[in-house]
Length: 418
Image 1 (cartoon, rainbow, N blue to C red):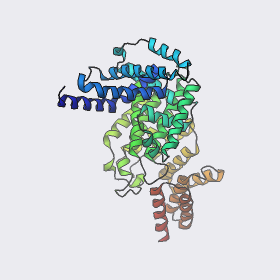
Image 2 (cartoon, one colour):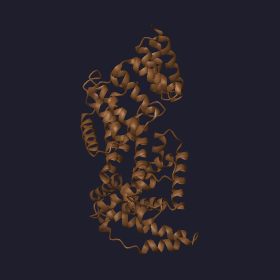
Image 3 (cartoon, helix red, strand yellow):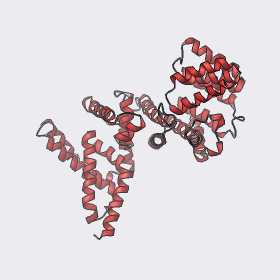
Image 4 (cartoon, helix red, strand yellow):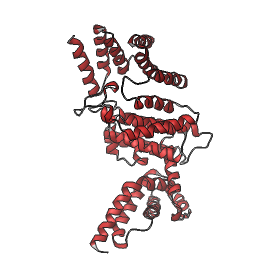
């Protein structure tokens, strides 16, 4: 093969790795029954391709070639370990005798493997932190360093979390399968919760120098699309809609200098209209199902914001009605706080302030900086300056994200200037 052909083969392999490696890994985990063996086999398969494809050419079905090569490499690795663990010999023999035609590894079969993998990574036997880390590592293909950076964790700590999660799956014999129809609703809730947590950390970082981490929210949206494609449950559709609608505002949520911009002050010309259109259509599709779960309801609220041409024209009474439904489905102090803010916009700051004060008097959200920040804003609007400043100071003591802290300090400076 000439130099140009060899270069083309290497570029083709790079493209396959970027687009196909998570799919290939999912199939290898099913075939080999072990995360670590499958990951090692994946790397060995790509190494073999790098050596062979420049000389022999790119195969007609690169994914099937790599899965087949990875399967043999994995079996060899298991057999090598039989010197230390004789129980592995039978496992290797069983895998070797499992005959599958590589041609059967079509798109549908491979996506079934990915769906199995998602449910395995999000098994309730694993801690939420382990579920997130393992999902991002195996399903999304992020490196340990990328995940650690996104969650402000040391790579060694993150790596240990992933190792423990894999060991738990192996020792507890957690099945690599899609749950039965009877178990699916509960198990799907766990999967959607993991995707939602990943998105939230990207959309509104819990701490650090930035308001958003786009790479993380983009991964969550990609996972959401995959779930809707593989398992079009109404709540999966609702979650994808919610993420798209929230993410549509990303460019307007901060100034070019990285300062926080509140929803009412955002430049709506910066909102992503394609995402809004797609998200709104998905909301309508989810609502038509008649199954109004929490993600669909939150997406419906976000859609009202998204279609309003200005902050002043937002249909706040409709938002309050959606929050009323959401409170019946999943009552929580955070939902109650968000409803109180909507009531303040619909009926005036005194009405909203009364609701927030009632919550805080019960002891709810006393350690939640956004509750104190919302209360401070309503007091500011009512020109109760001293009380507003005290509430902002309470919020500042609890806030950990730097742009939010700077915003609160700015509000305090404004009040001091009065």
